[in-house]
Image (cartoon, rainbow, N blue to C red):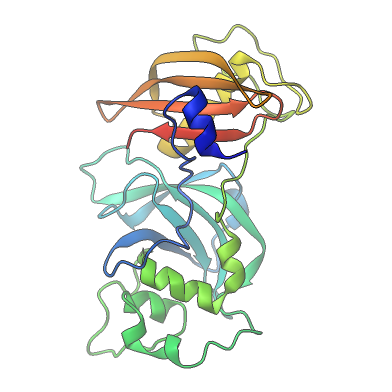
Length: 285
């Protein structure tokens, strides 16, 4: 089923904006589309690297970080650096702070991926300074060597800016990296998903994945997704859920608004009743 056909039937919803890695986006010079957060060899990854887990990086500069921007987690050690997962930036709790960035993990790479796939012949292009917009990132990944007298501006920082051009280079060196976040993935109810304990909750029921999705459960899925995107500080001011049907399939259309950083934002979701899949959504930025 095409999502744009669903829009025409049940309302003006956008394609699901899941803050994915824009592998196929047009290459725009100088435009920062995400970040690479480097993790040291002694960092206890198991404590925070799992889907849905958040982490606060007190030593990361808040400059340029915007909620929803994708993040790649890179671990450095004695050997070659490896990609260990990806996620995105959460809203800053205090915008006046110069340091302190929160991220949430969307997917874990298990086993980790080497920066360069051994079977790939990358040639000499990745070793050229002219190929990288952020030469500090190329240095971090081991493709370049910076000169001590003229170090790149971001060498040694926790987070490295990632441009669409540099993301393209990452995909050349490690093609399997392009599988991350390339297509919207459905989110489903599970046996571990407990009903939201907000004022609108009327039960502490735990649903099974085999059950159809009820109205309250659809609302819970939406609230959880918004909290994953914008943090636990999201305060919902309105919520309305109505049923819809298109081509023999039933949907819940969940819409409303929430407050964040003293400003209201509106949202609309379409969720399939039988599977809990996210068909489409629109969220104000």
